[in-house]
Length: 455
Image 1 (cartoon, rainbow, N blue to C red):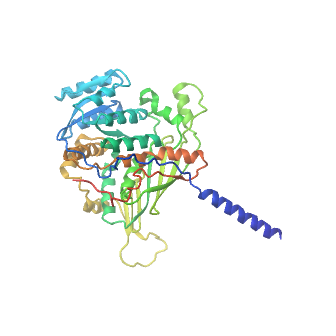
Image 2: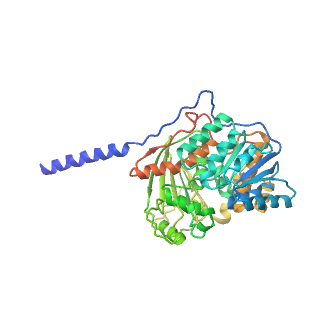
Image 3: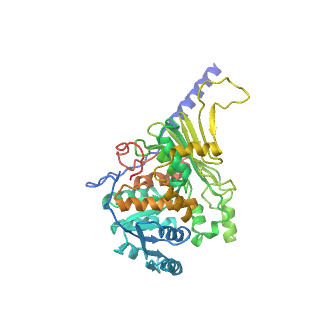
């Protein structure tokens, strides 16, 4: 009798646990204001010579000024930084190349004058994370297109503000996710679109990057401070963006549910103590954060974030298909089903053909991405920027603006990729409960079928 009672209790507990874990934290989705339309496949009027205003001239901003000076179809019309010496250095650099650019500086609101400058068509934002959204919103209100460094937004409210402002002003709002233009990711995407891997059903991405040598390089120590005061995946888009394109997110599928877990902050407090000389007892960000997402069509995504441990640099980038697999880290490789029946060898359990080295290069050469023309690849590698992918990103942005084409990444990509930060925090603070991912397209996610580049 006791055994029967115990079984009943156990069954009841199981039902209770299933009921509890099946609940999902739901977040409000604001209705689209009357008169606004979505920005899917939005194309603005062509701009023959794009006037660019660069805001934020630190590590990323100063290198952006240099790269953009090599991109055809545009010119840098203005630069801005809160520190006058940084602004002057960029003005002088451009002057040495025969480019006359207006400099704005002197206060945290100097960007407003740049956004109001009639010679500027595109505001290219490379500030610290806190200032991304205020600059972008003001720029769009002044009729400018915007491109925002990653992560472009750190809260759900910021994501919704960017979406709604972009829709209302009919201005582009692009996330500057350079990893979508890395050569391996571009080619693997082309292979996926050609059906080489069958249907992509799972993908993995990461930002595993030991930042020990870099913390002190950030202006006013802002990045370490942000990790101290925020919990969750704070930098998801490098690993997330390219796999979302392969999974056609808001182009036939959408993200629905997120769950996150993290470790304790073992190393973070040590970095603060080394920087300040004082003990740190309030560090929020775990050393390793792991996030899982599910899509409307039953596919899954795994994300990792780790900037605190000496792991080798990795964005993972793994695509798992019904008939094949691609991975970039730790060693690039493609796995496909072996052709023909073979005798089972229990000493060699591999049931797939793995391509690496020269064999991999020969296979991938058959699926060259259409944007990777020989001339553009050569120029990208010459100008540089993370091996050329930064230049490819800039080139594509200007090309699309020159020709009045939809951008490769729209404001919904920005919101979907960046919302992971706050959603993962919400999940973590509620015992790793599932959280519903908002539909930033507000119902239009399956109106377009499949990601594609515009030409």
